[in-house]
Image (cartoon, one colour):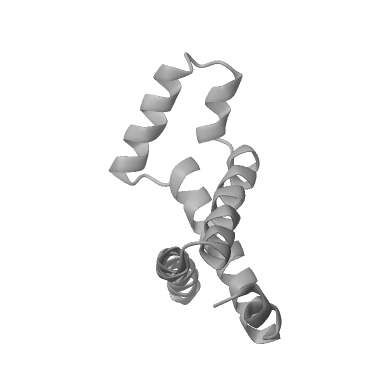
Amino acid sequence: MTLASFLADPWLIVAAILVAVVGVGRVTRLVTYDDYPPTIAIRSWWNRVTKGNGWAKLAFCLWCFSPWAMLFCLTWFFAGLFWVQWMLVTWWLFWGWMALSYATAILVRRDEPEE
């Protein structure tokens, strides 16, 4: 895929934006909030490395982390679009997986009966 072919398809642009936003949302929640053991370990490690200073917030604050996650996501996308084709395939696979898993979790949560 080239930049010209990507820009020529508005549905592809919309799909890429949706996948990026929802996928980054999932990664942000995973890193900053979820009780998933690997991310707990990463947050703990980051807090030790930064010695609890202002940079420590990056792993605990969704407002602090999400811009950097989106920068990484977009850099990966455009690197695949301009340079290495397989990077674009892996971008769709990873961020699509994150976006679909987040949408699925939200849907399942909404489907649970009231307590």
